[in-house]
Length: 120
Image (cartoon, rainbow, N blue to C red; front, side):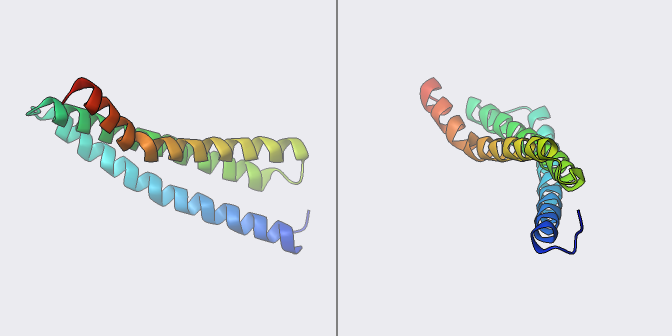
Protein backbone atom coordinates (compact mmCIF):
# COMPACT_ATOMS: atom_id res chain seq x y z
CA UNK A 1 0.00 0.00 0.00
CA UNK A 2 1.43 3.35 -1.00
CA UNK A 3 1.03 6.30 1.33
CA UNK A 4 0.83 8.64 -1.65
CA UNK A 5 -2.84 7.73 -2.11
CA UNK A 6 -5.34 10.06 -0.44
CA UNK A 7 -7.39 7.76 1.85
CA UNK A 8 -4.37 5.83 3.14
CA UNK A 9 -2.46 9.04 3.87
CA UNK A 10 -5.45 10.53 5.72
CA UNK A 11 -5.90 7.33 7.74
CA UNK A 12 -2.25 7.37 8.85
CA UNK A 13 -2.42 11.09 9.63
CA UNK A 14 -5.59 10.80 11.73
CA UNK A 15 -4.29 7.74 13.53
CA UNK A 16 -1.02 9.49 14.34
CA UNK A 17 -2.94 12.52 15.64
CA UNK A 18 -5.16 10.28 17.80
CA UNK A 19 -2.13 8.51 19.25
CA UNK A 20 -0.41 11.83 19.99
CA UNK A 21 -3.55 13.24 21.64
CA UNK A 22 -3.96 10.05 23.67
CA UNK A 23 -0.37 10.29 24.86
CA UNK A 24 -0.92 13.84 26.09
CA UNK A 25 -4.18 12.90 27.82
CA UNK A 26 -2.52 9.84 29.35
CA UNK A 27 0.38 11.80 30.77
CA UNK A 28 -2.03 14.29 32.33
CA UNK A 29 -4.09 11.43 33.76
CA UNK A 30 -1.06 9.78 35.36
CA UNK A 31 -0.18 13.12 36.94
CA UNK A 32 -3.70 13.18 38.40
CA UNK A 33 -3.29 9.63 39.71
CA UNK A 34 -0.07 10.61 41.48
CA UNK A 35 -1.71 13.66 43.07
CA UNK A 36 -4.78 11.67 44.10
CA UNK A 37 -2.59 8.90 45.54
CA UNK A 38 -0.82 11.44 47.74
CA UNK A 39 -4.20 12.73 48.93
CA UNK A 40 -5.41 9.19 49.65
CA UNK A 41 -2.39 8.56 51.84
CA UNK A 42 -3.22 11.62 53.93
CA UNK A 43 -5.81 11.05 56.63
CA UNK A 44 -9.21 11.74 55.03
CA UNK A 45 -11.52 13.96 57.00
CA UNK A 46 -14.80 12.35 55.94
CA UNK A 47 -16.43 9.61 53.92
CA UNK A 48 -17.01 12.15 51.14
CA UNK A 49 -13.27 12.78 50.95
CA UNK A 50 -12.53 9.06 50.77
CA UNK A 51 -15.05 8.59 47.93
CA UNK A 52 -13.71 11.61 46.03
CA UNK A 53 -10.11 10.43 46.40
CA UNK A 54 -11.09 6.97 45.21
CA UNK A 55 -12.89 8.51 42.23
CA UNK A 56 -9.80 10.50 41.28
CA UNK A 57 -7.59 7.42 41.37
CA UNK A 58 -10.07 5.30 39.38
CA UNK A 59 -10.58 8.00 36.72
CA UNK A 60 -6.82 8.37 36.34
CA UNK A 61 -6.34 4.64 35.97
CA UNK A 62 -9.19 4.37 33.45
CA UNK A 63 -7.83 7.20 31.34
CA UNK A 64 -4.33 5.72 31.48
CA UNK A 65 -5.60 2.30 30.41
CA UNK A 66 -7.74 3.82 27.65
CA UNK A 67 -4.71 5.74 26.42
CA UNK A 68 -2.71 2.53 26.33
CA UNK A 69 -5.45 0.90 24.23
CA UNK A 70 -5.58 3.96 21.97
CA UNK A 71 -1.84 3.79 21.40
CA UNK A 72 -1.84 0.05 20.74
CA UNK A 73 -4.84 0.37 18.41
CA UNK A 74 -3.23 3.24 16.50
CA UNK A 75 0.02 1.35 16.04
CA UNK A 76 -1.85 -1.79 14.93
CA UNK A 77 -3.88 0.29 12.48
CA UNK A 78 -0.78 1.87 10.98
CA UNK A 79 1.03 -1.46 10.74
CA UNK A 80 -1.97 -3.38 9.35
CA UNK A 81 -0.79 -2.86 5.80
CA UNK A 82 -4.26 -3.24 4.35
CA UNK A 83 -4.90 -6.69 5.86
CA UNK A 84 -8.67 -6.67 6.61
CA UNK A 85 -8.31 -8.88 9.69
CA UNK A 86 -5.64 -6.66 11.24
CA UNK A 87 -7.55 -3.49 10.38
CA UNK A 88 -10.66 -4.90 12.08
CA UNK A 89 -8.64 -5.90 15.17
CA UNK A 90 -7.15 -2.39 15.32
CA UNK A 91 -10.62 -0.85 15.03
CA UNK A 92 -11.84 -3.02 17.91
CA UNK A 93 -8.92 -1.88 20.04
CA UNK A 94 -9.69 1.77 19.22
CA UNK A 95 -13.35 1.13 20.05
CA UNK A 96 -12.35 -0.27 23.46
CA UNK A 97 -10.26 2.85 24.06
CA UNK A 98 -13.30 5.01 23.33
CA UNK A 99 -15.39 2.96 25.74
CA UNK A 100 -12.69 3.40 28.38
CA UNK A 101 -12.72 7.18 27.92
CA UNK A 102 -16.52 7.15 28.12
CA UNK A 103 -16.50 5.21 31.39
CA UNK A 104 -13.85 7.57 32.78
CA UNK A 105 -16.00 10.56 31.82
CA UNK A 106 -19.04 9.01 33.55
CA UNK A 107 -17.15 8.10 36.74
CA UNK A 108 -17.97 11.37 38.57
CA UNK A 109 -21.68 10.78 37.86
CA UNK A 110 -21.44 7.24 39.22
CA UNK A 111 -19.68 8.54 42.33
CA UNK A 112 -22.48 11.08 42.90
CA UNK A 113 -25.01 8.25 42.67
CA UNK A 114 -22.96 6.21 45.16
CA UNK A 115 -22.77 9.19 47.54
CA UNK A 116 -26.55 9.56 47.30
CA UNK A 117 -27.02 5.87 48.15
CA UNK A 118 -24.71 5.86 51.18
CA UNK A 119 -26.04 9.21 52.32
CA UNK A 120 -22.68 10.93 52.47
